[in-house]
Length: 251
Image (cartoon, rainbow, N blue to C red; front, side, top):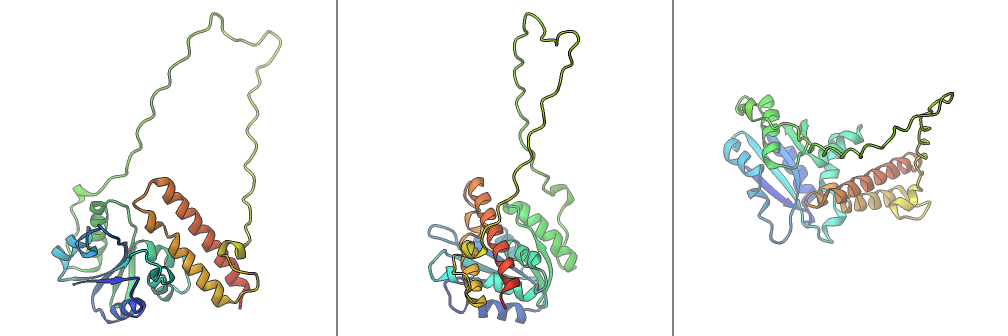
């Protein structure tokens, strides 16, 4: 069975929590982007193939972010991750970005998104087969391999000089001095990063953090060029560091 929830639904958080708590057996929870002209979330890969092949043993919940103004103030996946991983922000963050696998309401694994649906499908089936005997393991021969970067082109050799540049007798050839070390990273004011006035309450800081994390979440630019993805990841790290600093000081 496959369920689709939308960020624009005011009850999306409660519906997500109810599905997680009420589903027996294996459950996959994942966030997806959805917009005009895009196919319905339930018809996309790897979800459609998982439903066709293993729907009898697996329930799926897709939480679709339409990028609407109403939805940007909600973070149902973040709320669920905080509830499931209250002691680890790293695990909670990974759960919001990947495929979260649960069994009887308890988290069992997180499968990282690799971008290509067929690659994600292979690793999802591998993880699911380890949790249920009803799902066979994928064929080892079809395991996606690491992507190789194109080999750099050989540089053209400069034309030979008439005479070799050799140091005069009695002198020593010295290597160029090493480059200076990079400057230390600039510590940014966490209040400015979150866009709130110093001294604001913890609840105000939390709301600002969640709104910005939702706005700059890397999944929202997964379809764009790599430079936009790197920018979103860098901004998300800044927000996480700012919230971590304020959370320790605010009561």
